[in-house]
Image 1: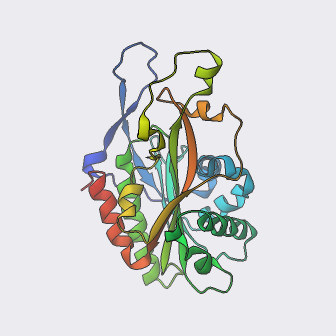
Image 2: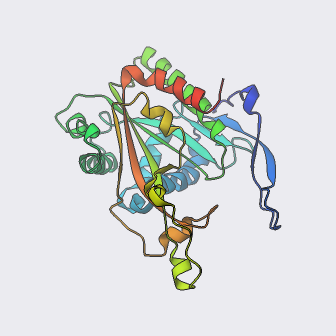
Image 3: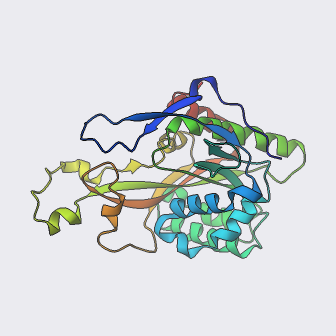
Length: 287
């Protein structure tokens, strides 16, 4: 039975945006108790699949997400889910790591690995070594970190997930399990703000130009900026599947401009992972 994780004292109760429909400018906050659990096969399948679909965005349809979830749930002692109503409820966030070398014969992992090779080749030159690390002939032990959370979840839940994962990997290595990673690959997402199609269709006044800020990159996962400090490389990539012209407006949750998401890849050397975990905690204000 999955063991309930102890909550850090500084994150026992966190505020998340409420659903108040009033016109007040101040967002109402609801105090929520967050609890960390190990993945639970009989409960978490659908919740994890939903979060994976959100993580891969438009390209989620390219993968066998059910099989990826089955792999995640086959290693319940590794990784975390974050819930608010006990371990029988659906997860609001999760984090885990998959050994791409160990699962290289699994078709779902093959498809995902080929995707990562393709996207890293079209992304930043700092990711140029990923294709060789992930090639079938490579003996590199690459740990793929998968993590996602609902958009209104506070970032303070992230450092405990990374801390738990680091500790669990260390225990697994001591137990001679295949989690001695030479590299870690983290899949994430970024976005840029673009002019709203709704504004164009309704002949609304054009939003004020933001100049060079129009090209600014924003992070769905703010911890990515801390991970960059310890990374061998990182970069954005375009999704293979593009939504229709109005897709960006469906992602306008908290702003007036449209949102164009992109995939994001971070490569961290295995020896730098613990330092990267500390950087995430410091960056997000965790102890």
